[in-house]
Amino acid sequence: MGLTLSQYDALMREYDRNKLMHKRELDEKFNEIYSKIPRIREINESISSISIQGAKRMLLEGEGTTEDIKKQIEALSKEKASLLRENGYPEDYLTMEYTCPKCQDTGYVGQHKCSCLKNSIIEILYEQSNIKDVLEKENFNTFSFKHYDNDVKDSITGLTPLENMHEVVKTCRDYIDNFKTEYRSLYLYGPTGVGKTFLTNCIAKELIESSHSVIYVSSIRLFELLADSTFKKNGSLEGKDLANNILDCDLLIIDDLGTEMVNSFTAASLFNCINERHLRRKSVIISTNLSLAELRQTYSERVFSRITSNYTLLKIYGDDLRLKLR
Image 1 (cartoon, rainbow, N blue to C red):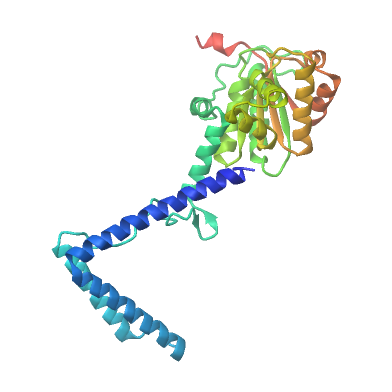
Image 2 (cartoon, rainbow, N blue to C red):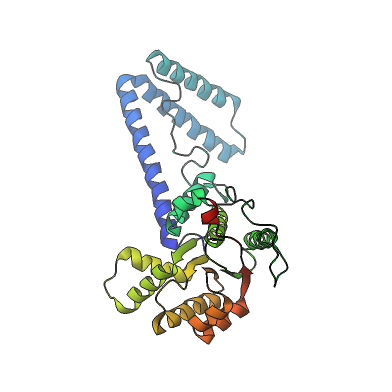
């Protein structure tokens, strides 16, 4: 998905505004120079006339630009540069400037997106994600295994917290690498403070950097948005946009599932949300303190079935890292 059509159109309008602004600046420069150095207007008119004559000759005679025409244009150009220098102007004063010289404010170099357009898209996606500032601190560059214990093995998996976390991170890396071509959703569960949210933020940053749209919401915020869109006719525009994007974004991250007040509405809304995204083949990552047994008890059998049958289940365990880092 990346940007919505309206977001893309707004971005392209910004490129058009930049081109128009620089064109006006250039027109003002021409007016200034023509007023101070009238000879430059004559030179430009001569160059234009000679170029038209050369083009006509090419069409009629089927020949390239002749040497005499090239020499005339070259001599006039040198005279113009000399006049600009003599009057205290740089030689390129009457050259069009661009916000991005690489793409000349079109957003594209040939058929490919310019780096300036890619950066603008990523910036919009960061703002849309709701966690731009957090991702500057929580990403794979700042992630560390050193706080995970490697002494005590889990009785079920047979792995220490460190060994297990290596496996979980490997799965997450694979998830990122294949996100564009492989539809998958993740369910990260385990006790408080073992790094579930940190890991979802790592995934979010990597996917945003590759121009995928990611929206992060806490479970409490998710159900507030869904309730507003269901029961309130006059919600905020920001809230409505976010509610619409919840079903359409490339990746929806629901953090801390189970911390909201659970009732029949939240259970039904959660199923509708994850089911609709499943039908659209849109990925979801859920992080929660709920075990699989607690998930079944807390929500409907439909929610439990949808998640356990369609999500990759990643259990994270160990000590509360927040206590260790104090």
